[in-house]
Length: 386
Image (cartoon, rainbow, N blue to C red; front, side, top):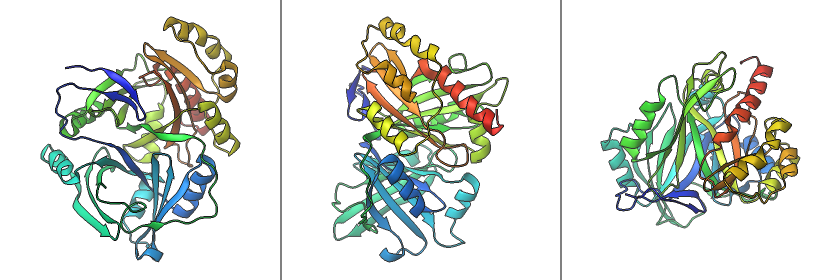
C-alpha cells in the first residue's frame, strides 16, 4: 500500500492504493459557530477577514429559535448562529464555552451511509439522517459527536442547487469588503484533556477511518516553560486533517491547559486557512485590524536561509518582508511553508486562526514550534495564565 502524498487545491492528498475508504469525504462543507451575537460576529468576519454575505436564516425566514448568518470566501463557509430565546440550549453552550466552534460539517456523497458506518463503529449520534427540502432540491444531513461537545455533521448536497440549504435565504448586503485571499480550510486543530490524545486518535482511526499522518511529542514541542503532545489525523484522500493536542508536563501552564480552563473542556483550538499569497493576505488582514502573535526575534530569521539550504529549497518570497509581517517559515523534503497565527479572536484565550501558504511542504511547521510557543507564552504572561 502506497502512502504517496501530492499537492491538491485542498492541500495534501494522501493516496492509499488499493485501500477502501469506508467514509469518503469530499472536503469541509462549513464550520458553524455558536456565538452571543451573530449579527455583530458576521460584521467582524466580513470586515477583518474578508468574508462575503451568502445566506441568512432567522425570524424573517420562519425560524423562531435562532438566527444564522452564512459567510463565504472561496471554498470556506462559516455559519454564525445565535439563540433567540432564553431557554434555547445553545445558550448553555455559549455560557460554558464562549463564542466557539460547535459543528465541523463534512461534505459527503451519502450522508445516510456516513452516519450508519460511523455509528456502528461506536460514534455517539447527534442527529439521525434528516432530509431538508425546498424548491431548489434537497439536502440530507446527519451528525455524530467527537471530542467534548463538538459535532461532525455529514452534509449531502448532490441534489441541491440553492444558495446554502433549505431554511436559508440569500443574504443581500450592501456591505461586502473585498476578500483577503483566503482559499480553503487546510486543517482544524482540537485540544483535548490530559492523556486523552491517544483515545481520540484511536476514535478517528476506528470510527472514521482516519490515519495518523504525523506525530509530535513533548521533546519536539516544548519551551523552557511548557510542552504539549500532538498527532495529526487525516482521512483517506487527505482533504480533511485534524491535529489533536493534549497538554504535557512543564514548569508552567501550557497553552493547552489555558485553553481547557477557559473553554471548559475539549474543543476546536484553531482553524488553519490557506492562501496563495500570504504576504498580500496578512498585509491586508493587519490593515483591517486583525491582531497576530508577536514577531519572532531577528535570530529566527537569520537562521532561515540555512534551514532552506539544508533541504535544497530556494524561497521565492522576500525574507525581509516576511520578517516585517511576522510570518514564519519552515521546510521539509517536499518544499517549504509560510504560516502565521492570530491572537484569540474573542476575549477568552481560546479560538484563533492560522494563515498558511504551502510551497510543497506537507508538514505543520515543526521547525516553528519553539518560536510560536514562545510568542504564545508572551501573551499568556500578559494574561497572568503562564
